[in-house]
Structure formats: C-alpha cells, structure tokens
Length: 554
Image 1: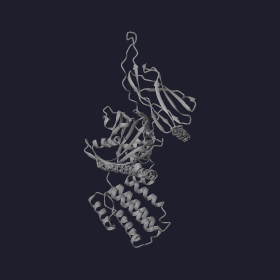
Image 2: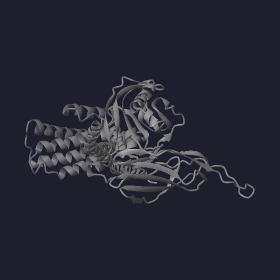
Image 3: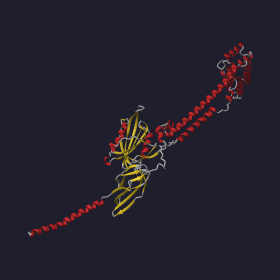
Image 4: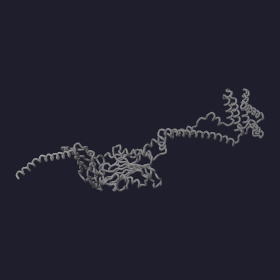
C-alpha cells in the first residue's frame, strides 16, 4: 500500500510540469489577443440640466481609447433643438496605454420648455458610437411687469426678393429699342432733303414739263447718237403733260389717235388751240415714230426744231387751257399730298424691312452661338430657366440639419405625416412649388425612434408612395448609390411618371429624383419632380445635389 501511494505521487508529480506549461500558454495567448483588440468607451454629461433662458451650460463628451485611435467629435449644429455657442478645444490625458479625450461645448436655448439634447455621434477609427440623450429644462425669467413693459411678438417680415440678372435683360431691351427707334427716325420721321427727281415730281405739270425739257437738253443722248432714246423722252414729256393738264389719255395713244383727240377738244371749245400748233405737234410725233420704229437718223437742225416745237406746244397748250377751278386746285393739292404719303409709306416699309433684318441677323447670330432653344426660352420666357438664373440661396433645413442651395427658400409645411411606420420620431418637411407644374422640391429631416427599428428602404418606399398618393401613375423606378462632391454617401431613386393636375385636368409627363441620406444620427431626404426632358430642370437637380452637405457653421 505504501508502494502504491508512492507511485501515484510520483505520477502526479511528473504531470504537473506539463499542465503548468499549457495553462501558462493559454493565459499568455488570452492576454495577447485582448491587448491587440482596441478598446473604446464614450460617455457624455452636462454640468447642469436646468438653465434660464439664454443661459449657457457645458456639455462634455469623454472618450477613453487607445493612444493610436483617430477620434472625430460632433461638429456644427448637431445639438438642436439646443444651440451651439462655442466648441472648446479638446483636452487629452494619457494614462499608461490609454488615451482620455475630453471635448466640451457651450450650449444654450432662448425659448422656455423641456428639451432633449439628442444623442451625439463620435467616430473612432471609422466605427460609430452614440452618447446617451439628456433632458434639459429651460426656465423663464421672472419679470416685474409693473416696471418692465411687455410687447407682442412681431410677425415675420417679408424680404424683398432679388431680381437676379434683370439688368442684363433691361440693357438688352434698351439696345434693341434704341436700334429700332434709330431706324424709324432715319427712314420715317427724319426730313430728308428731296432729290432732284422728287423735286421735279412735286412741281405742277406745266413747270415739271419745262424742267424735264431742260434736263433733256443736258443729257448725253445726242452725244452718244442715241436718237431713239432722245425722241422717246421728248415725246413722253409732252404726252405726260397733256395727260395731267389737259386730261386726255396721251401716253397709250398712237400718233393719229392723239391728234384726233386734240382736234376734238379744239372743236368742242375745251382747248382753245390753233390748227398750226396741232399740225406742228403732228409733225413732231411722226418724226419721232420714224426714229423709234424705222430707225431714221434725223439731222441736227430737225432735232433742234422738234425740241423747240415741243416746248411751244406745252406753252400754247397751257395758255389755251381755262383757269383751273377750285376743284382742280384741290385735286392738285391732293395729288401732291398723295405723293408725300407714298414717299412716307415707302420710308416706313424700308424701316420695317431694316428692323426685321436687324432682328433676323441678331436672332441668327444668337441661335448660332447659344442654340435655338436657349434663344427661344430667353425671348419668350421659361419658368424653370428663370429659376435657374436666379440668385441661389443656401440654407440648413430640419434636424439633423441638411444643407443645400436652392433658387427659392423652402417653406416649412405645417401638416406632416406621422413617420411611425418607418421608425422615425420627429419629422420636419420643407417644400417649394407643387408636383403638377414647374419644378417641385421637398426636403425632409427625421430622427430615429430607435436606431435598431429604422429601415432606410421603407423610408425610401414611403417617399415613392407619397408621390403615388399625389396622383402619379406608370412610375418607372431606378436606383443607384450616390456620393456628393462633399463626400456624403446616400442613395438615389429616379425615373419617370405620369401625373394629372386635379385643377387643370391635364396630364403631365414628368421625371422624379429622390435622394436619401443617413447622417448625424438622422434620416434626410430630398424629392424633386419636374417636366420630362427639361434640360434646365436637369441643371437645377445637379446643382442642388452637388450643394448637399451636413455641416453648417455654428
């Protein structure tokens, strides 16, 4: 028995070293593993939970982590409904292999009530940590109304809208009107000096005939041996005079017909002219016929004689005519006035033609440089183009705030749907326009009831359902990931739809874009609806999308 006990003791003694080695190896591996895993702890506190209106209190976030960790504290107005006054510098304390960081913020509120300071996001090595929410009571300040007068809160004041680039269009209109006005003045209203032909045309028939005969003497027909042209001009002068002053159709009559008409006037006493004058006139007309139709070449003496004969015929015919009646004088004045009116109408036609030519040239050049659609929309107007060319305004909307730039400031909607079905708590909505015409934009910002209960896909589906509830049909839905120029990731749902305006009873072919983000512990969404194929709307969508951010100045 003693021997057996000794053997057990010896066997047990021999196994202890092996067991001790495995145990030590296990402990070493265990502590080595946990030393490699980073450890972080985030806590938050406030130096007080009850303040007076406008009083500041200190909100403090403490982070305990490894010395090599990268920590990003909240920035900007992420403490709403409380307001950030100042973000103090970060304090750091190294305790052995741990780093303690302390970040303090000065916060305040200017309305009384009980407010919930929301959970704050702290990023440690890319991993998100949220602080606990804290309730803060903002108390009113007792005021002695017997010494301090009380006043009603003033209503919101309308701010005068910026007219954008209106001065460019005004300058363009002034230039165009100045050009058209100059053309009208030059061609219509300006009293131009009369040309020699116009002066002759305004003379009485007798004076005009003598003036034209004198002008014929100064011509070069005879020098160039253009006898046919000379005699044609000579006979046309006397025929035109007889037609205007004697009122006989002379221009379209043959020689024989005209002589017969002259003799008839003489026989009836309407024209007191002798037979010799008629005979001389007949000789001139016959000589002219020979030159014009038989190509006869007259002698110089005959040309001089015919020239003098025509002048004598004009003079004797004038003397043979009775004194003009008052009616005839009126007709003469009417004739002169008619000539002036014709001249004025001619100038107006020239002015209109010149104005049209200027507009066509300006339109052609503008179309070549800027395109037909752009010129058409600029001249006749385009509501979405006007939005695009306005002075854009940037603003932060809702909580957690989403910042974006828009051509018009969005207005808060008073009636907002409950977001319980998508796991959101507070829900703020801002919008401009409507879905049935023009450009519609809606921005919403929501907070989670519980982060674990929030479903982003349901939130996006709810936005699509909202558009369908407004009357949309035949919706085509596409989706893709989105990264804004500011580096914020989100999702983009877009496509086409048909929607009927309930008032105008008119169906609209439209496009829509839904941008969704999960930032700063909340859910933000932008919905845009616009006419299908509207390139100005596409530019607005891109500009709004590129301006989206989630950091605003304190």
